[in-house]
Image (cartoon, rainbow, N blue to C red; front, side, top):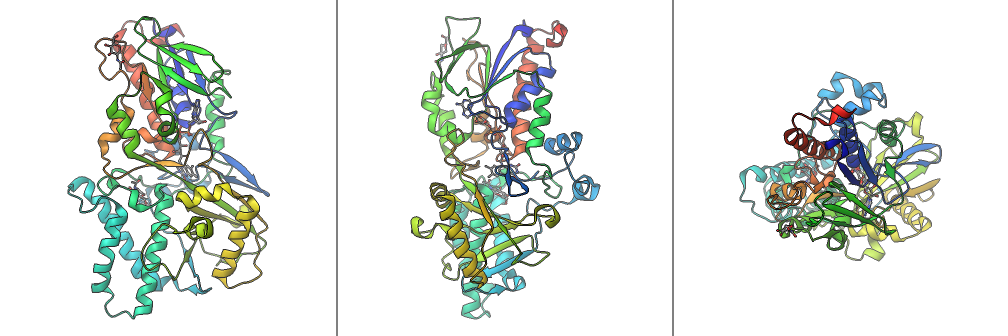
Length: 500
Ligand SMILES: Cc1cc2nc3c(=O)[nH]c(=O)nc-3n(C[C@H](O)[C@H](O)[C@H](O)COP(=O)(O)OP(=O)(O)OC[C@H]3O[C@@H](n4cnc5c(N)ncnc54)[C@H](O)[C@@H]3O)c2cc1C
Ligand SMILES: *[C@@H]1O[C@H](CO)[C@@H](O)[C@H](O)[C@H]1NC(C)=O
Ligand SMILES: *[C@@H]1O[C@H](CO)[C@@H](O)[C@H](O)[C@H]1NC(C)=O
């Protein structure tokens, strides 16, 4: 029976691929992946920038250690630099914040002494740490991380910085604003005012110093795809509607309707579309509609935009050992992470740049980071307009009136119709229950109808590793295992492998 089980996977990102890999290895033969675009990989997307290979989507393996499935796969396929494989690298536990060497510039064109900003950086990281503690303690004093930080900083500053002169104190507050913008990028949100304080600690970090793929993250996708049966994926095949709970058809309780009108019958469908897509299209994607508790979790969880702007220079204007560049606006003492006039001042949301290393491999390439509605507005501009804004910004902050980028390339994740943003975060009022609702299969009560008709995988369904590639991989394996154990308990004498 299970050898004839028909399974459709919607989406050929890393979670869909991971689910397919597990199911194929367990002996399931009738698996199809339907992918809306012409490529595999989804938010794992590698591009070219001049002579360099750059990541348009996922950048790092966060926490590369034995427990991280992405690290283990990348190592198996030989995709990592030797340093990343060392036990020292795997053991380095930095709690998700790599100790990058910063260069800091101010809006009046000064290069600031990074040590002078240490009080603000220290206070900010203490507040983030405290934010993550409310998750286990409960009783959070504010709804959002942004509210908490804005309430706490003035009190603590009055006490700790009472001997600091007014000008230096105001600069510390401006640094806090920059750090809020950094966190908007990390959490993929418009503002830290939208990130729930109570759920902030749900995210778990793994040990290991974040590493990259020297040949591009897509190498992982290529290797995984090469192990799947050829023809398993149908590209350019967006799914319009999942018709489930077909009571008249006991054979195949689910029918997947594609945009081109094709209808595919299945026993099980694994949905891996991004949360951004689900938020926009849930009402037409499921018939009957999602149960209310699941829908509310789809709405409560956040899905924001974080984009990259790659910029190349003939020569560096940062120090040789610099790994991250922060820009501090001297008019931002109010600790806001939202720009009032987006069309005029969207560029103020860019917190700065990370430096692509090693220089021998990339030359002088920076990656700018910008989150939120300002980032979504940036996507509507031409590349020339973005390049112009970046050039003016760098000239102002460095005080160098002639520095000019050689080329610019930016991502546009919000305008990707199959993604609608970057990654998920728990919004205000969220708890682990929302992530559990996200992963709950349909039907919820299996009493009258066939169980496990619609399953849910993808980054936004992992209770602790949401927003990451390893979270997406583990979610795909989890849903494959759900089906595998279902069939091994239903037909213990006839494991799926017997037909191989
Ligand atoms: C800018 C950026 C930087 C990131 N940096 C990192 C990082 O450094 N480290 C990290 O671990 N993670 C990072 N991430 C997150 C990581 O990329 C994702 O968590 C992960 O790739 C998600 O995989 P997924 O399979 O859940 O979703 P996706 O990769 O989005 O796959 C979903 C697939 O579904 C398809 N689809 C959508 N709608 C339909 C439809 N109706 N019919 C058929 N197919 C459909 C899409 O085209 C897509 O291919 C980053 C993401 C972005 C955008
Ligand atoms: C935001 O990112 C930080 C890592 O800097 C993490 O500790 C925190 O849990 C994240 N919060 C959410 C809501 O994703
Ligand atoms: C699914 O079908 C069963 C049996 O016909 C019915 O009792 C149940 O209400 C249906 N569920 C939904 C969500 O439509």
